[in-house]
Image (cartoon, rainbow, N blue to C red):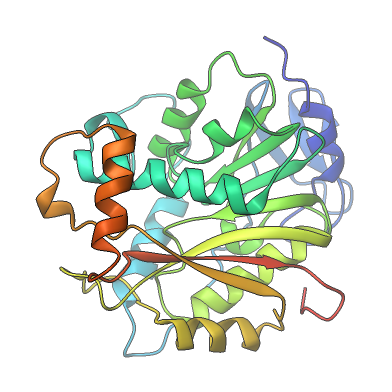
Length: 300
């Protein structure tokens, strides 16, 4: 099936190194200034990475190994050979994770209130757990992911949908002109440390149109069974982070109250909702979703 938004997305592309327009040139995309070529692996799958991996500049108290890991992922050449499904593949996941993703998807859809006229981006979209369901609600969506296995899985899972473009890119250097999108999603990624997370929110702001909205999430430090490799944020630290990048218009929503250890089997969605509401009376949320609006006062 021909991708209906392919050329519209190409119109919004820019070189991640010098910010100049990227033009279609036969089987490649080419920067109009530095003339660097970027490969097109399929009609709606491109690779547009910066020449150099952007350093996160984490301090010594943060998870430096995560940055080294992402740098290795950045250096992996693209290949259609698939050795794994990638990060967060729902068909192999525990029931508790599948139910949580379904709940978070429903909540993001409700509070973002997207429409068929909108064009969006899923930043660090993994295997497509959020971008693919969202595609049925909007005019088009771009799925950005650096890790090859996750990107290919998302591409394969979205077969038959003509309004998704997949781009292998580094999310701190998104290859899009400023003000390209009506909305953005970014989940399970603002977890690497304050300096990294500030850069990522700023980059999301940059690619949003004025008045555009973003849904991002943060892991709650009060959750049962925390992960030492994740940077956690309470509500106050979320507010401080948003203030640091000039985001002033936002709302915070808790999501996911059921501890995964008590969900060894799949539940009906209605049963899950009842149990989740009950747990919210005495247990902390797993994450907080922040929905913010880009305004002229925001740093972008």
